[in-house]
Image 1 (cartoon, rainbow, N blue to C red):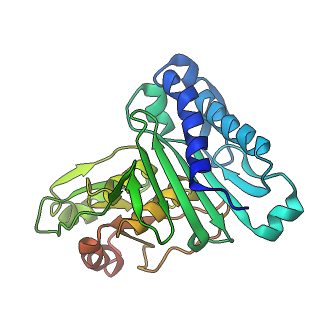
Image 2 (cartoon, one colour):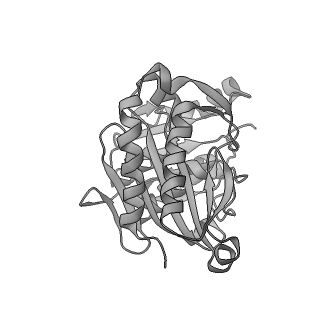
Image 3 (cartoon, rainbow, N blue to C red):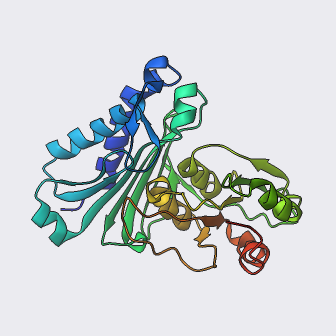
Length: 279
């Protein structure tokens, strides 16, 4: 049997119950090792991931777990997991640096797929680890904030658009200079620190776009948010303007552009057609 959306929510709530009291504490910030995703693992990351792994083992499911710290691991019987192609993509804490510093913008991100690519993601849950708000979606059934259906805003570039930008440190100043004409067209710029939650902000109409030009952006950061945004009527695409179809793997990393429907053509014209950035 496939995992239900209620089971995914239960995984997230169990993480919240343990992690929320640790936010902003010294215990949370204790460094451990470098995780499979490439970042330095902190104690709070390991605690969150272990909660998810333990619950999955107890559920007697057979799937491939792709998670920020441990990388890839089969839960249950590998042969059955390979046959059914069930895959769970998890970032136990997206926004770990915010979490350990007590900045209230971090989340647990869980995506469930039946297949081998991003297009096969069927269910998604993102839980705000500060407010306990649930963003969730099932493919073809819309996106929700708690019990309320959500949709992207209908603002265009002539209106007061909010966006987030995430740039690599390499060629930072050159990129900012080249992007300055674009940046001036937006009403406000935000740099929040949890890609998963930012995609949810766009999905719920609180922001309009997310420009992430970092090649190091990981699948686990955005897998759940990708489905939630699409189900809310939003758009997310590669820097060449094509659909994101990456393989479900801990090694999958990619930049992207995400926005409401009104800004898609504008961003493609400004960024895709002009290739207005460096790497």
